[in-house]
Image (cartoon, rainbow, N blue to C red; front, side, top):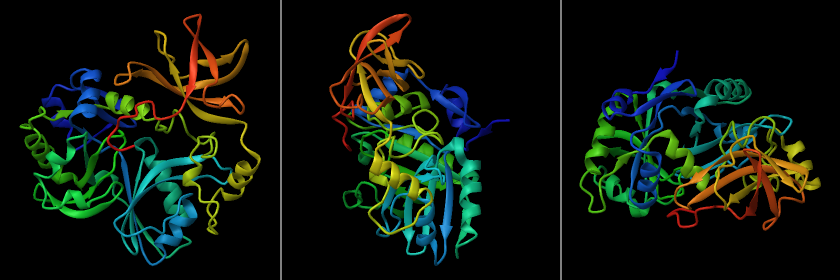
Amino acid sequence: MEKKTSLYEKHVELGARMTPFAGFIMPVRYDTLISEHMAVRENVGMFDLSHMGEFRVKGPAATEFLDNVLTNDAEVDVGSAFYSTMCYPDGGIVDDLVVYRLDDTEYLIVVNASNIEKDWAWVSSHAKAFDVETTNESDSTTLVAVQGPNASQVVSQLTDVNLKELGFYHQRMAEVANKDALLARTGYTGEDGFEIYVSSDDGPALWDAVSEAGSSLDTGPIVPVGLGARDTLRLEMGYALYGNDIDHTTTPIEARLSWVVKLKTEKEFIGREVLARQKREKPGRYLVGLELQDKGIAREGVDLFEHDRKVGEVTSGTLGPAVGHCVCLGYVERGYHKIGRDLEVEIRGKRKNINRVKLPFYKDGTHL
């Protein structure tokens, strides 16, 4: 049976179209996907992301432990956040995640909803070799995201934190809407924004406070945004989605996430040997951005060709509402991955030109 977040009743009251997703019943949209998408690009939107998983890691060896299971460097300043992959010994991706360093010996890991059980088993089993405590706080945490160029106008009404001093990918414990919260300037949309973590008991009150604070903006009221627009927003930015663009069969090197694989450090993380070899020898394929200027949508699983030779496959594809045409991510063979390479895609039996382009597709986001 699918779970419900603490905000389920709020979504029903708003008339959201609900759908099963990653073991939860979640709002896919409230109005139209395009209106919700453009609200985030041009003004501000609010999201229920409480289906995501949260693991707390605490103890003298917290940094050492995370340096073992993550490809990125956990030795960051307190108050910082960072993006990382977590890999199997063969270099395949367990998950991609965001980590917040709360204190010298304490971190919060935020994982994808579809991977909570798998990730928890992976993290907790490897933690046994280190002097740390791990806690799965997924079921007791509500996450509300406020995203868009005017996000700070909403959140500034709810907290005494000077938001001008809270940089991108930084966070702090704070009071938000009179609730104890982790306030982070992070997000998955390419726009300025905040992710606010509170206890599930405080979730509904936080949602109402955000909605009220955003109701009287000169630029128009804040709107609730479902998972449909969250997907189109991330795809316009070229952000990979676990289960579509990355999984156990892909490596961070192939997915062009080498920037979160710290091979120049001495840290020995799981999968390092394989990833170092692949980085040195170069993988046989790469994840790339592709644009279809003609009418049509190249969706997941569609083959990519150069003349009659299949050279890859689309992993994510949809209309980018803010760019006005189909945008895709897909894997192509090495040599076909260079920017400017013209390929073809077959849609409903017809070949159409599709161009290899530089990411992101949407280049006017407030946080690129």
